[in-house]
Length: 98
View 1 (cartoon, rainbow, N blue to C red):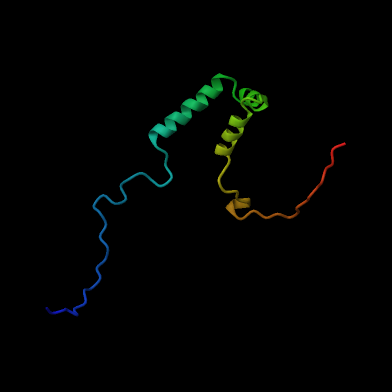
View 2 (view 1 turned 90 degrees about the horizontal axis):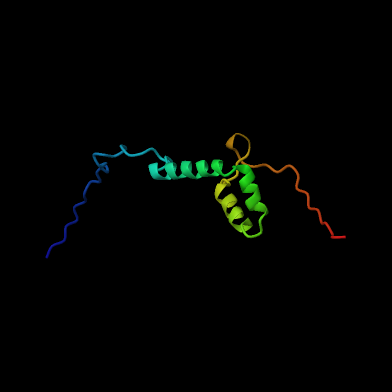
């Protein structure tokens, strides 16, 4: 048995023939977009902001409303022109009930 010490040259990684022909990064699925449009249309039909305010005030649906708010808020907060958030002043206030 003989062992070879021959080194193999590294070759450039080949791309598949259909590389780059898919959807653009960040684009939404057709079904997701249509579903979102249907939900917003239904919200318009039942009163929009007024309806959501009623759900927020109702103790039975307030938790679901807050879950919805959590889904709508951005995942990352950015400052002016997309930069970092800068806090100029932080105030801590202790309030005692009367």
